[in-house]
Amino acid sequence: MSRIIVVSNRVAVPKNSTTALGGLAVGIFSALKESAGLWFGWDGTVMDPVSTEVSLVQQDGVTFATMPLSSQDYEQYYMGFSNRMLWPLFHYRLNLVKYRREDFAGYERVNELFARKLLPLLEPNDILWIHDYHLIPLGNALRMAGVTQPIGFFLHIPFPPLDVLRALPVYKRLLRYLCAYDLVGFQTTFDRRSFVDSIENAIGRKAQRGEMITAWDRRLRADVFPIGIDVDEVVAMAAKGRQAKQTQKLRDSLGGRQLLIGVDRLDYSKGLAERFQAYGRLLECYPDNQGKVVFMQIAAPSRTDVPEYKQIRRSLATVVGQINGRFAQYDWTPIRHINKGFSRASVMGFLSISHVGIVTPLKDGMNLVAKEFIAAQDPDDPGVLLLSQLAGAAQELDSAVFVNPYDIDGIAEGMQHAISMPLKERTERWQHMMTILRKNDINAWRDSFLRGLLETHRKLKRVS
Image 1 (cartoon, helix red, strand yellow):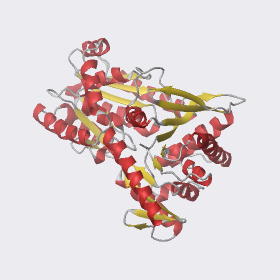
Image 2 (image 1 turned 60 degrees about the horizontal axis):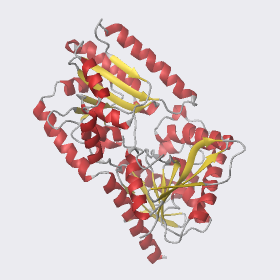
Image 3 (image 1 turned 90 degrees about the vertical axis):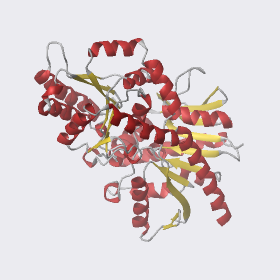
């Protein structure tokens, strides 16, 4: 069996065999265990002078290979080009884009560093799977170093249309880098179409024939692989979490009121301000809800070194204060805004007792919280998913209540529809979406990508 090599920007080494992993890590880790694979990436530390040694740790048959970054690399590769340029650009937020040539140089430098450090660890029959926007150039750096093994790339965030992508001065170089992979995977058909359109514009001719793309003397396949969740794991965690002390305390604190819940990283792409404003509009336009519903938003801090994120936190606190100040009663606070993270088990318990799950990003590659909310529900009394039509999950979860995240009144109307939905309709919608989740779970996503990568690599070898 070929060994699988996974490369991602950040690698968190499990402390022991019982350490809980996130949803994505669960799917990848199981494939790595089956193949005695290796997971390579940044260990999350910054040091000067930086160590050039790769740390190797084994856990359950998987080798974790990690290394630190220098402060310059951290500032230019991670904070600079990845998070001040690519993240806002790929989420269509051109007003937040900050391009600096030195940041792009650092981005290329770290990808070349990763390639050099990974090379000695590779074996002839390895299958390489590179993840996300931080590592777009890595495949090309490996090819330039002589790597001929199958190399696939999966983009977890959206891929922007050409008119947005062109705001990046080096967009053609990024497109060339992506063409070094055998297989490039996207979350939705929209993302794939944007990629093909951008390639064809850059080379000035049609690039796609059948399922293959030809550009810059490279042939590759671009396809759609919507990421899923481990449904059984979430169901089990939610069932256990429903009885946990934290969940019981939350339920008791509601006093019989319906719970609306949002769980997100604190990020401008998540539409949190619009979500809060819509909830205020709900209380204003549908006053019967006053004192009868509670909206709890968990917004775990992220990228706390980026000034824009500090501003988000301040502006959200202002909006929440205005709504609570206007509508609160002596025994009822309309919004509970919590700026900290909880364990995954706790979150699943909270989701399981919520009547409405609010997932309204302005743009999102997939959004696994939407899928986790569905899987966490009590089959006898399931809640309703309120979902942005601009989230990748909207392409699959077609029984959700859809809203446009820019339409404040529309979100409020969606909230009211979800709150008042009868049990029979809630159950029918939930059952339909659970069928989809089980069909397209994390294992199906992983297996279909790796199978597609091997098939494409074999096809390319026959042609060459």
